[in-house]
Image 1: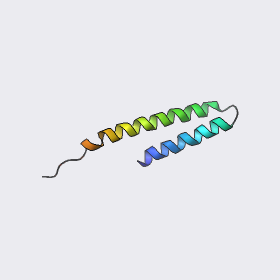
Image 2: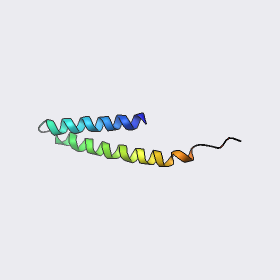
Image 3: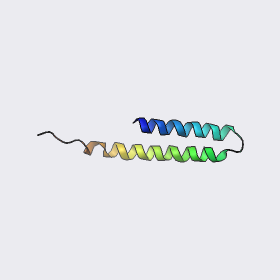
Image 4: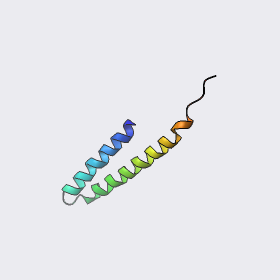
Length: 57
């Protein structure tokens, strides 16, 4: 969960810097890509989360 939040934070910071600073539009694009990857990572992790637990005997 902390990795997901860190990736979201990085995406937001890169997006803000890329939007504000003229000539650094590529940072905005990288921020969007990181955001999408973080959301995919979270979706895969939460979807598989229920199968990892074993039933004790």
